[in-house]
Image (cartoon, rainbow, N blue to C red):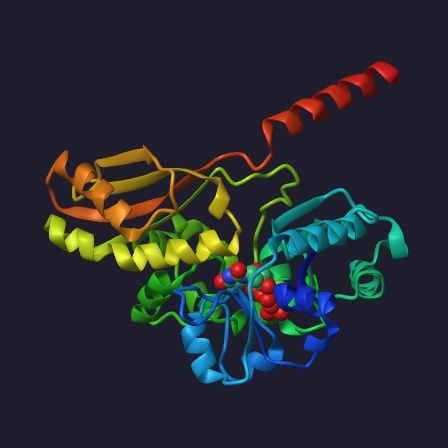
Length: 360
Ligand code: TTP
Ligand code: MG
């Protein structure tokens, strides 16, 4: 049985801004561009959230909801610096760390000897160190796998932690809404509701064969996740190379025009993820994938030197569709990403490790 901790900073960007300027404490804050721009909020303080202000909301809408909202432009250098300091605290406990974004990470503490190996106490200590050394707060989830640990970290937010013990998994997942399963976005959730699936207990009533019929290659995963089973490892050297979203449609889409009308929804889904992951500056190529009625698929990829807009994907889709001009059952869109590690850095790391080996 593994011991996984998911740590998620509270109101991260807003908390860092308050740390920079303590006068902002207790105020309704939004991190984002001005309301007369087309900017959306990165996040909002809890005071602002009481007014319904939240991440990804246009600044213009946010100020309408909360007249006293103070808008602050994001300062990514400051967030990166704090994120690095948080990571240094994690490293005192384990080297099995998988960062998901600047503000969250999975830690595998199965073999960690601190506190007699108690993941609960390790999480508590990590949070205490983040608070005393960095003047920021974090929440943590502790569970036997990544899926459950991530859900658990949300349970006692802010500044809290929640443990799911192996014997509690069954009860915990039974009432869990399907929206909490990773990878279940709005589109899949709507589909699930149409099949009468609202909770993991509902999913549990169906076989893998049935789930595969409904949800394609995700069927097997969904069968496991509905039972709280997730075998994914904490990936310490993981680096995202692409970010794509796709949708299989219940009925084949007959014409190019109809395919094009599906782009805005897919684009919105993709946009949310690219922003959350802070990948904007690594976009190299844009990609469209089409699967036709007869399951034959085609992809079209192009280099891009600006942030992709829905129009770019529409242009690509048109090219890909023209190849066959047949009904479509799946549309995917996304991007390929450049490495986050500058080449020069990789090189110097290689030299260092070579020197180290020589020294040993
Ligand atoms: P979250 O952990 O989702 O949010 P949060 O840390 O602000 O608040 P919570 O206490 O609920 O965890 O995201 C972390 C940071 O990522 C957030 O501070 C800003 C950024 N972010 C965006 O830029 N865009 C988004 O749509 C989201 C959700 C987050
Ligand atoms: Mg957070």
